[in-house]
Image 1: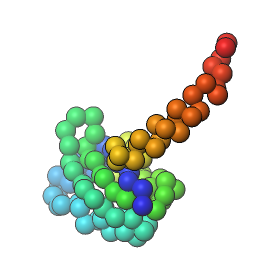
Image 2 (image 1 turned 90 degrees about the horizontal axis):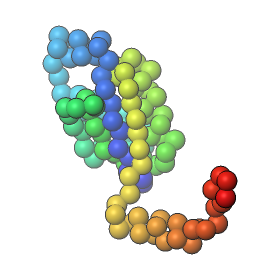
Image 3 (image 1 turned 90 degrees about the vertical axis):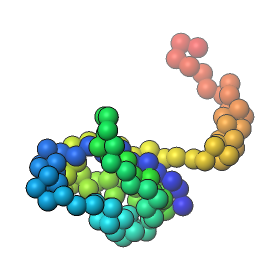
Image 4 (image 1 turned 30 degrees about the vertical axis):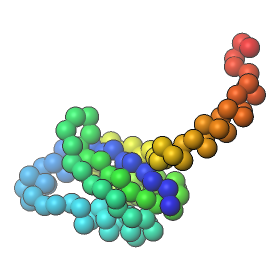
Length: 110
């Protein structure tokens, strides 16, 4: 399965609900990911430009996007971004493919 990292920011309504009824949101996040056929690796609440970071595995990118859309549809998040992640050892093969393609693309004006 592919690894995905999701960054999210809670909506003001979600923050209000979490303050009114504090709870650990790990299980609902885990249940959603598992329903999509994936696996929760880590779930963190963070400071900075994002409120939460989720690291998960999913069968493919469409599953990861669908998970994000399902959460966004509830209004619980005001911003969500999901990116694909590769272990550094796997990225060597990607760099080798790029090397084989280097020079095949003509940039604009070239």
